[in-house]
Length: 530
Ligand code: BES
Ligand code: ZN
Ligand code: MN
Image 1 (cartoon, rainbow, N blue to C red):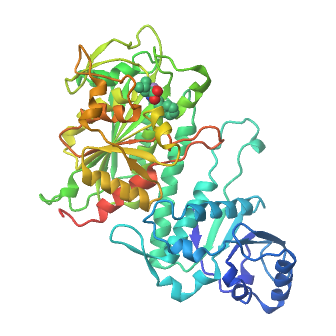
Image 2 (cartoon, rainbow, N blue to C red; image 1 turned 90 degrees about the vertical axis):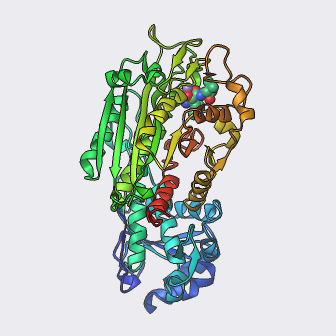
Image 3 (cartoon, helix red, strand yellow; image 1 turned 120 degrees about the horizontal axis):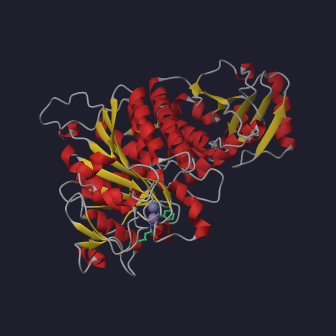
């Protein structure tokens, strides 16, 4: 992945990129034009007049080899009254939604000019020193300048909107183009460089997760995911990985976990990733020395098993490992940033297949926690993997455990593709995740796991059933998992609606990596044992 750079050109007309993307707001347009050399001003003004360009949102004019300017192309792009939008805090999760979309549109237009180098010129107002010192609320105890907010928003639009999965087409010209090198004309000050580093790491993590999610199940097998864990460990000195193999899982009595993979042609395994980033970990009172455990559902293909899925939608189930991909992505981003925290990532991988060896509806399985589960549907496989991974995690005495899973179709029914759901046994953890979601514009919304809802999974002959009848499916799944996470703060994120949205070429979103990275960063920057 190319990484974006910051550079402040001495003069606009000297920028020699293949394309200058010039963002203009209506109030600033004359002031902006006056920053061009006098010889170009008349010409640019004339073109903008002819095209009735006012700087309104989404308007654009493309100049080819404009006289007096070094760049090959100038794409002048209207952003409307941006200052107001950007100054709105990130506190409300959708406040900047329109702005992000607008920036994606700007980059898409610049990319369609097939330029391999793009220089982005910020709206005139933002290049003024007075703005750079304006402080706006940006989440927990933090202030950011509007310029930092703008840079983050632009980078997310660039990386997010311009992502393309390379795919497997045999003729190269049909596959995607190289990403252009982007320079943002802003001073490389420390706060902006910090912001850039964060966004680049986030983007790298998200790209990893999105690529893995797009890979089909014949390529992205459970072994392939295990190799990704090993690869992270070889890329970062703070990361180690261990692959718990089938016989070790058997010795641990991870019977629910093993049941899911039983009819698969691949052996069962459970990759565990350790990121040890905590620097003052010898302090006994150091609460932050306790790791955050992240468990990702990694079903490389979910056929439903004996409770077979309908054929027409089944191919979407290559995305059922998006939770595991998210765990890989967020740990790699945390390691790249060197976050001062310890993380354990568990990839709960399996292929949910059919065959004579498959687990069946009616089976009763003794889980790793010794609680027994009656199988109602073999298609409720994610919770079978995660319940054993949850009770396995207790040994790490975690400060929190978060599982991330494309767990239920009901999550899409409840929330669509806009936000993930959170269910938790800890109010502070739930609040911390909601806050991180708002701040990172990757929102989650809470749902209850009250005793009233727990009744849905009563079973006649086992401690519980793995699915309810006529019950709200997303909550029922949360209730099931809550029974395996009683000794520690735990939260479950159902990302069935947010981790991917099928029907588009680039379905995988990389969510909820923005949320989790923000959550981890908050922990890493909070004072120890407070
Ligand atoms: N992976 C699916 C959930 C899913 C469905 C994710 C559609 C994304 C899009 C999960 O394993 C599943 O099959 N869940 C069942 C649970 C039911 C059997 C209790 C479901 O949602 O129907
Ligand atoms: Zn599934
Ligand atoms: Mn399923």
